[in-house]
Image (cartoon, rainbow over all chains, first blue to last red; front, side, top):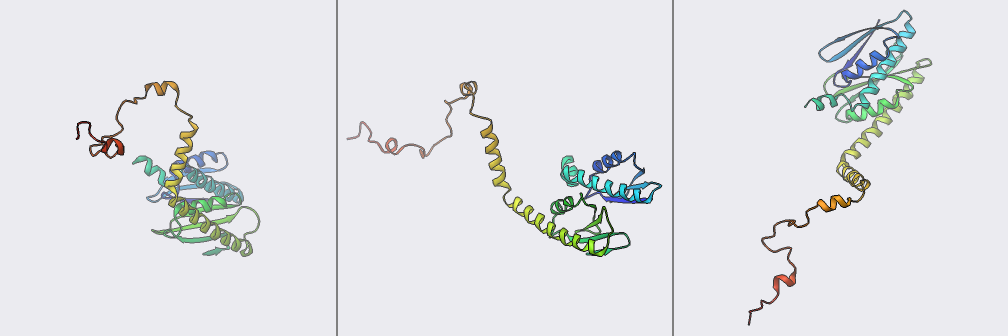
Length: 79
Length: 142
């Protein structure tokens, strides 16, 4: 099992959700929240594939967060 | 800066006062086609960028140049960010003018509706008055 922790001040929650939805068919996912992080646990029988999916998921979440203006944009939108 | 051969990744820790988050986003984004990139905040005011090559063996010979490239990109992005921030007003003004210019001249309907009769501003001191009007001789003056 691989655990990815995305810091809330760096990654948009919507971006992480969207990324997980995009990769849902490639591994098993479990989402949870910590005070400072969005936590994604993913599992796949093939360790190499699990590493690849975890890496691509991280890139996807980062790319979406950057394209949507960064993690600060949600706070600005709420204000 | 750290190279972790066991996990096949290179980590760089940054001071956020030197490298703003926007610059870190920009630099990290450049690497997502050839590396797995993960950002984290180990403590307040610090940022951590972790790079793992997507393909090939993650040896020190591969990871060390990645750190160098990342450092260069960070510097470049931080400098671009500063320039953009410094010129923000000018950029906004030019963009507004360009958009206003692209909208074309006002239509006849818009000109018809425009109220030309109203005074542009009050001028109690007569500053906008022409010199001739202001100092012309009065008719009944001797």
